[in-house]
Image 1: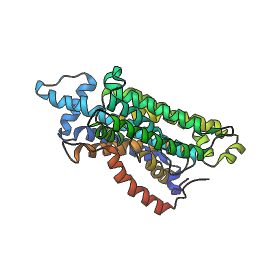
Image 2: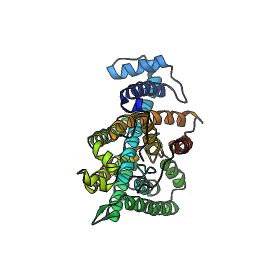
Image 3: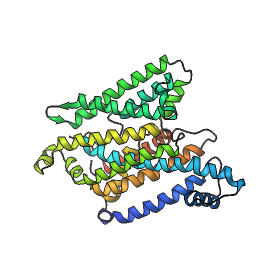
Image 4: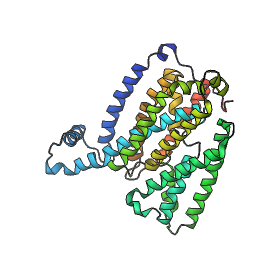
Length: 352
């Protein structure tokens, strides 16, 4: 799974870090300004300054201010959070199961979340949570799926990477079947369309209220993964090597599984299932800074955030006033990029 990088870049992630931070800040401002209704950059900066400092605006600017601060800013910031989280968790999952094809959704999390979301769309369950019903149901569905995968995959010998992948894939098919039955039995005529759009990912429902939990989950997840970066390096080499170096592979894998479940569940609950970010970003980052998980975990969240900000902007602007699902764009970009990576670097899939 490890990817070699040019020697001159391996020890110098600082430059890449600074460039990505600068690019991300510029991209955030541009993404807030651009959209079906373009707000001039000067006005955008003025509105943001007024919102952040408590300044006043002219009555004629209320509409533009509302678009910038109440609609686009939380959406773009949520794209930053979700992109960063998916990329970081993708790094952890690939090390946990020692498989270059792994991503945050390989453990059946998105399929479990889809069952929870479908119950809300089709039958109106969790109505007590109001506008947050879909997010709550998706999060509970994701956690439930992870519990089932864990219980089915664990043995007396511990958590095997291969068993985790196989059980996750098998249960994902089962969850998809349940979801299809729920849609079929739904009294709502447009349930299938709504569920499909959610499954492909969208940030259209982003609000300031959807940011705190997702942001905290991602920050905690990234910090914990950075603390475990050395263990990830060892775990990627195999359980035998890990044991010889004093790293308890089963215990570390269990901790990573729980962390992955919580962070992915929090992200899926606010954005739906967005594919390819957690799969492709870790590989691209390894090309830049090498296979050290500490370096990769410093760069990958920024790369994922930058990528998803632009993907969301494309989703909003390609076919206005309609909005494309994010998963469509990430797949159209991610598939050729991943194929090119394979041909260039000669990956060997499946691990040991």
